[in-house]
Length: 116
Image 1 (spheres, rainbow, N blue to C red):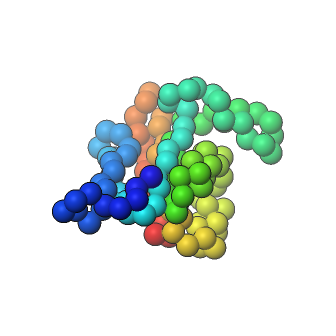
Image 2: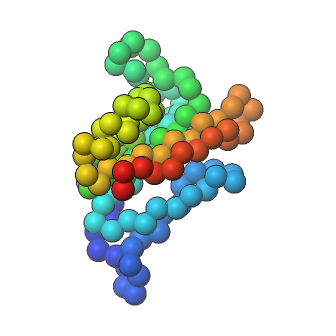
């Protein structure tokens, strides 16, 4: 979570992603959180099916508060793009980014932050 920017800077610069897909986001008076399976394994449960999320997907969320970005980054590991876009269009200051990995650990796609 970023409150006021560092002295002599306009924002906090945060990098995310992996390999050739490292991106950055500038934070000022907002929060950026990430979620996925890389650190804790299959710990996210899809409430629609009751099954753990198994897709090698990482999700990040930008939001006005730390609690909201944390909750959304987890939700974004489950939701599809149209649903995320719709949510972000309805909630000012909320954005998302995704990274997908193949079975060999290679990154196959990363989206851009939206609705910022």
